[in-house]
Image (cartoon, rainbow, N blue to C red; front, side, top):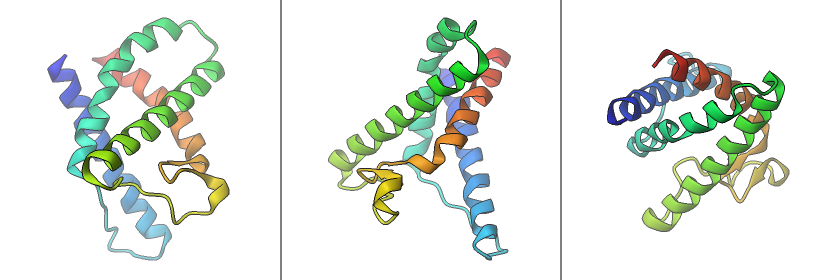
Length: 130
């Protein structure tokens, strides 16, 4: 389990570096500057605890699984953001400056729903491979 935790943590870091680098390009910064936090390794590693969920929902229609993953990831993003805010005084991915209708307490961006929907399927592939 520790090995898979580390693998999920490293994969999550890698994807976040790509995501923020591509976001830099969209903002016109062709240096492709990326940003992540050490905390994120531990948060992404929590995916190991989603493996039993995957086993339970494996037989569901793909679109139902996508909705489940989206909701689960939103819940984890909100919960870990709140916990970090309490423990260290801030949430590394504070979305408070985004428009009010697109965030939940600054911890979750609702416009990321399609990304989380797809991320769940990527997780399934990684889990099946491991």
